[in-house]
Every structure is written in C-alpha cells, then in structure tokens.
Length: 189
Image (cartoon, rainbow, N blue to C red; front, side):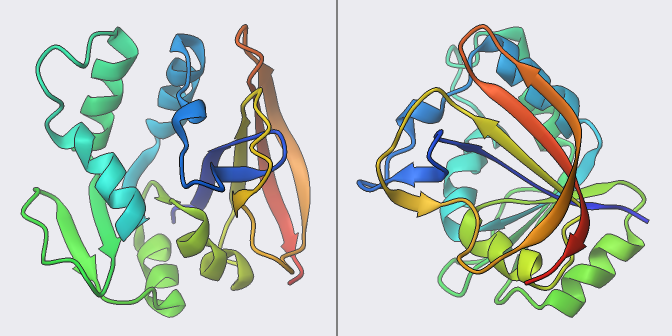
C-alpha cells in the first residue's frame, strides 16, 4: 500500500503563488532540486490539476539545451517514468504516455488508487490537494520554504484545515530555503 504525499514550494508567509499568480521566486537551487529528486524517487504516480499539469508537462520533453544540470536530467527521468493523473473538466485527453484524465477528484477513487499502489502517490497543487487533505487521505506533508515573502496569493493549505503533524525531516540549504517533511498523525478538519 502506498502513501499519499503533498509537497509544495512555498513562500515564508505560506503561499504557493503570489497575488499576481507568479511563482518565479519558487525556483529551487541545485541543492534543493537534488533533495526534491531524492524525495520524488519513491513516487510512481502524480495527481495534478490543470494548472500544475500545464507547468509540469514541461518535463515530458524539455527543450534541448534547457535541461543543463544533472539534477534537471534526473528529475526529467523520474517524472517521465511515473504515471500521471490530471483532474480537469476543461482539458482534452492527454497524449503524453502514462497519463490519464479524470473529470473530478473523487476521494474514494483516490483512496483506492493509493491503497492499490505499491509505491507513494503525490498530489500536487493547493486547490486539488485541499479535498484530499480535508478527507484525511494525506499521509505526508512537505513544505519547501523559500526565502521570499509573497504578501498574498494562493495559500498552500486550505482554510479551516487542521492536523496533528510529526516532523520527520528538516534540512536547510545554502540559498536560505528550508525543507520540512511531516508525517500526518491525525487530520482534524
């Protein structure tokens, strides 16, 4: 049985995107990217909403010359080797390999997918993850906190969500970013 993981790069004040919708400040440096790769090796299925899918599909076939660091090559390999589920009512069925489209995020269907998985499943994006968090399906929450204050925008956790967490791992990077990995011990929302 797999575990459902939710991780996101956030600003110090808790936003995944700033008020303008930008997340340009969220680009990880080499060390943080390598750490993220280490965490992603155990993931064999990614669940994305439309917006995050449109960002992440870049890794299916990065333009030649843009993937110029070993950690980028490694992430592309990890990502290409995983299954992807996109949740959207507005997208056409994807043509990328190992990718399927769900029209809604049915938490029972998600629970079955995670329960049947032999490896971890990752749910990405604050809007999509909110339903899984509220349903108590998320086993691990990771914040990659960047040294940036967004001042508003899209919060990474939904309003009203509460949970007991146990810190399993923390790491500080030379850039000032901090990774905080928590096990969810009890969801209470």
